Length: 67
Image 1 (cartoon, rainbow, N blue to C red):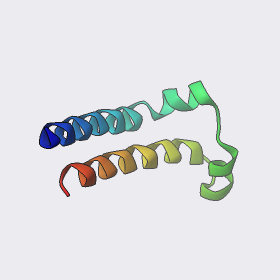
Image 2: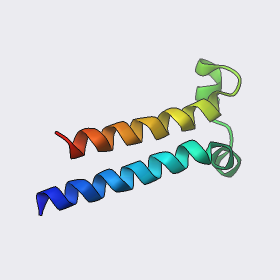
Image 3: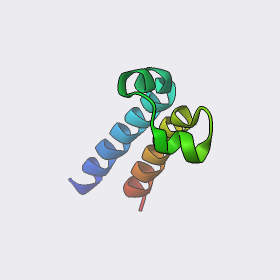
Image 4: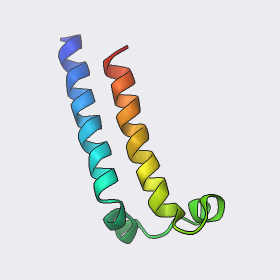
Protein backbone atom coordinates (compact mmCIF):
# COMPACT_ATOMS: atom_id res chain seq x y z
CA UNK A 1 0.00 0.00 0.00
CA UNK A 2 2.82 2.38 0.85
CA UNK A 3 4.45 1.84 -2.55
CA UNK A 4 1.17 2.50 -4.38
CA UNK A 5 0.69 5.76 -2.45
CA UNK A 6 4.20 6.89 -3.32
CA UNK A 7 3.61 6.18 -7.00
CA UNK A 8 0.33 8.11 -6.96
CA UNK A 9 1.95 11.08 -5.20
CA UNK A 10 4.82 11.05 -7.71
CA UNK A 11 2.47 10.93 -10.69
CA UNK A 12 0.31 13.74 -9.30
CA UNK A 13 3.39 15.84 -8.54
CA UNK A 14 4.73 15.19 -12.01
CA UNK A 15 1.41 16.17 -13.56
CA UNK A 16 0.99 19.33 -11.49
CA UNK A 17 4.62 20.39 -12.01
CA UNK A 18 4.41 19.81 -15.76
CA UNK A 19 1.20 21.80 -15.97
CA UNK A 20 2.82 24.66 -14.03
CA UNK A 21 5.71 24.66 -16.49
CA UNK A 22 3.45 24.51 -19.52
CA UNK A 23 0.80 27.01 -18.40
CA UNK A 24 2.93 29.56 -16.52
CA UNK A 25 1.57 32.37 -18.70
CA UNK A 26 -2.06 31.41 -17.99
CA UNK A 27 -1.34 31.11 -14.26
CA UNK A 28 0.15 34.59 -14.27
CA UNK A 29 -2.90 35.97 -16.04
CA UNK A 30 -5.19 34.16 -13.56
CA UNK A 31 -3.39 35.17 -10.34
CA UNK A 32 -1.70 38.37 -11.46
CA UNK A 33 1.86 39.54 -11.02
CA UNK A 34 3.75 38.71 -7.84
CA UNK A 35 5.46 41.87 -6.63
CA UNK A 36 7.98 39.95 -4.51
CA UNK A 37 9.09 37.84 -7.48
CA UNK A 38 9.23 40.89 -9.73
CA UNK A 39 11.36 42.76 -7.19
CA UNK A 40 13.92 40.05 -6.44
CA UNK A 41 14.07 38.07 -9.69
CA UNK A 42 13.60 41.05 -11.99
CA UNK A 43 11.34 41.78 -14.92
CA UNK A 44 9.35 38.67 -15.79
CA UNK A 45 10.00 37.28 -12.32
CA UNK A 46 6.45 36.02 -11.91
CA UNK A 47 6.79 33.77 -14.94
CA UNK A 48 10.11 32.49 -13.59
CA UNK A 49 8.52 31.92 -10.19
CA UNK A 50 5.86 29.66 -11.70
CA UNK A 51 8.53 27.71 -13.58
CA UNK A 52 10.64 27.32 -10.44
CA UNK A 53 7.60 26.18 -8.46
CA UNK A 54 6.83 23.62 -11.16
CA UNK A 55 10.36 22.23 -11.10
CA UNK A 56 10.34 22.19 -7.28
CA UNK A 57 7.03 20.30 -7.27
CA UNK A 58 8.45 17.64 -9.57
CA UNK A 59 11.66 17.31 -7.55
CA UNK A 60 9.89 17.12 -4.18
CA UNK A 61 7.43 14.50 -5.41
CA UNK A 62 10.32 12.45 -6.86
CA UNK A 63 12.25 12.68 -3.60
CA UNK A 64 9.18 11.51 -1.71
CA UNK A 65 8.55 8.62 -4.08
CA UNK A 66 12.13 7.34 -4.33
CA UNK A 67 13.45 7.80 -0.80
